Length: 117
Image 1 (tube, rainbow, N blue to C red):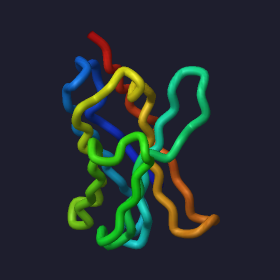
Image 2: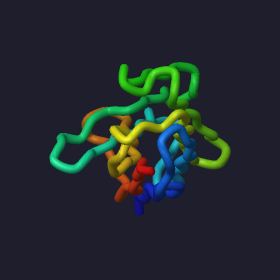
Image 3: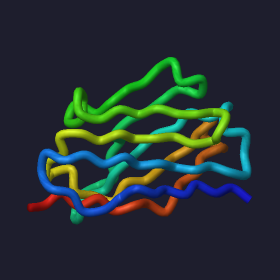
Image 4: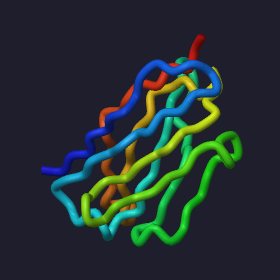
């Protein structure tokens, strides 16, 4: 049974930091590209960051470049998102996504991040 379980969300003040984790199980984690998406109220889900299966390649949305860092630990089947210098517009539900081709695509249930003073 495939599971992606996000954790680490919460309330943080502008300029603060949060670290999200996504623990995977039920599939061969090291074969999958991993991503973080987010969906703000009233908006479409958007890609935040992507990391290749081996961790050697990453990509970020322009809005988070220089502030967010995606990483993975294939020994622990976990992907992380370190978020620094958070802004109110980063408020959203953050989702973990695993993909190894169109037929192999899995989503977590999300963790809520609220940036507010």
